[in-house]
Length: 262
DNA sequence: CGAAATGTTCCTAG
DNA sequence: GCTAGGAACATTTC
Image (tube, rainbow, N blue to C red):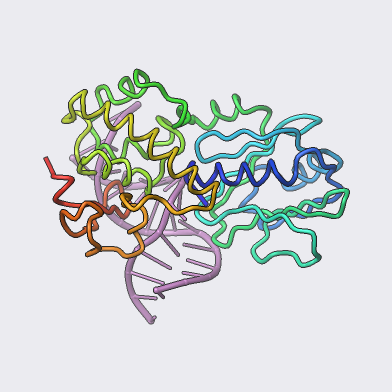
């Protein structure tokens, strides 16, 4: 459940289920998930309640009524599961039991997720050198970030310390929508191309976010939905066959006809 | 059986 | 400091 649109879905889910309910019990799982001692989590969460939630990049922040914030990073496979029965879900790493006997499980089979306790969203952003939230960035901020960079555009889009929230799938989508080859060096892109990439970041994330929240599919014109078909799938614009390569160490899908290499 | 999977971090090397 | 590439992490799924 990892990139910004999926985290938006988790935020909506949390808002609809767990706010303003007293936590009466806390059960913790694998130590590697916890970025502070597990006893701290138990101490801070028990007899407390969540007041509100915020999202920054791929992180979800749950503000506690007493003090501080519970910070969630979903890794590749983390998600929230709210339920009222007695069976603890598989792969539960954190379980909270509320006063009304409802429960929240934070599950993660691959255990790449992380949980933190922080004083505030701002302090966490600073101490983890998180960049600007991908849906809050201005065109000028984006152009400033691009200025003087020598790496690939895909690497830049996925760099969380520059822009927070874009991962492998939606970096590919933005570059497909702007007909940019993922290996293009940032300093070889014109201002006009960069502006178009900026526009599509907002558009792609909004469109996918809506789709995730509403439980709808992403548009037919999107590359995202072809990822599972892999190489050889037809380009949504009927221009060629989708190819696969590696950029910045990640599996990258693109259409060699639409996204010509420079 | 082997490979790959929406992420981050750490290491090496240029 | 920036960037690329690879490995590691742990488990499921194809």
